[in-house]
Length: 169
Image (cartoon, rainbow, N blue to C red):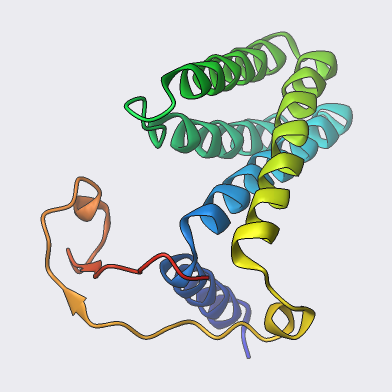
């Protein structure tokens, strides 16, 4: 299997995993993406690879931005406003870290995100109650596809979004 085919299959698997995931699982995936990319940015800062660092910082920022825009301020407004402030702080630290080549700024954002990620993983474990065997072999649920007017549909090549996922894990 060539490298391009392997990457395509990995991307398809990940997309399938996201489509079938519980919303809380998606939140934990976003935290993990931000954390992994911030760690990569710190590594690239040490090696001097500016391009790779810029890409890692951008990916971390995208993940945190998704967390920020996903907040529903109509429910638990105090909590969501606090989370929004923490996300904005992390985004600020990422920009500062990248602009000033400061590992300390990246680590400050990493500290906040890591703390929040632990809490969200605990919530996911309680809500989803997955067993080790379920985690070992992911089985995405097949659901009928339907065309809907979704704000992110323009980013999908087929302009279709998956129908309701439901709230089960």
